[in-house]
Image (cartoon, rainbow, N blue to C red; front, side, top):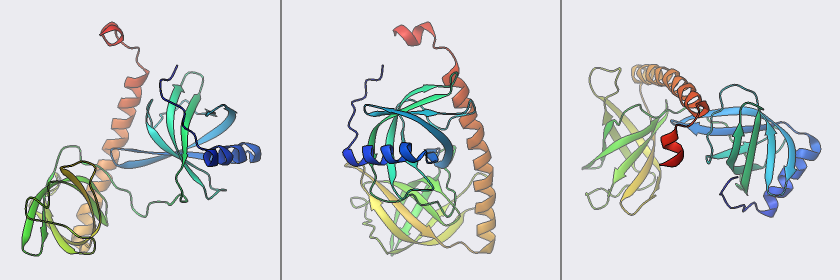
Length: 241
């Protein structure tokens, strides 16, 4: 029995009922290591605040408790939901805690990935520089994680031109990319996440493409390993300690 509270709002319930009534195709999308995985689901039934889906016995890109996105190619509405139950043996996925996102699903123009190990990035804006870490990277942008940027001499503003310097595992030498800051948020009192559009030249774009493609293959393997681990019986220590 799940311990998560049910907080499905009325609009989300209406969307689910319409999908069930029309037997519309439903897709689940979830990010793993920065890479987006989308899978087809079959909506079987709605009971109270939960929805029951039929899934294949292949690898599932979500774990118990994860928050995922639910959308349909025949509908503009997108829902956020929590994974309440997974039973691969019988091919069942139970979702609950539905929320209407308030915007339609948009396909990513470029796939992004999260590095296997932390990568240090120097963010330069005007005459200031700030050490950050690479959260994710694509062919056209990066996400950075910074610690107290304003207190360390840099107060990034949306629209500002910037430069970033870093080194990828497959590259000998540093990579310097011009860019523009497109968003900044503060998930904590001391942390900032910074989104930057980058403008690589032809050679830099080739290097980035090689890295992203290489990392995608690694992430798929990591997902398969995590999926297999989830299927293994829990040990006595995990059950009682």
